[in-house]
Image (cartoon, rainbow, N blue to C red):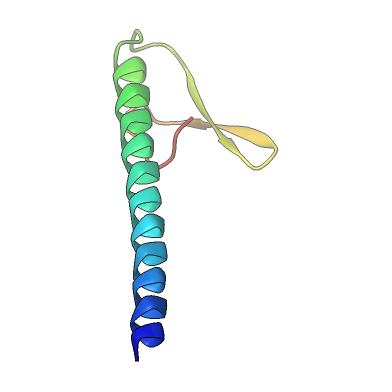
Length: 70
């Protein structure tokens, strides 16, 4: 019984660590998106903007909502 509780505790701690790592990764990604959006919005309106797609770059509309970091 005590061994089973110890195993459940270890599993729960491992799951908690995974969730904390995922949260940290999402927080970093959110900061990156905010920075990208701020940088692009500060560019002159005539500046062409491209987004990486696979091994190429595609011209995008400046009003594009950033879903991935550039």
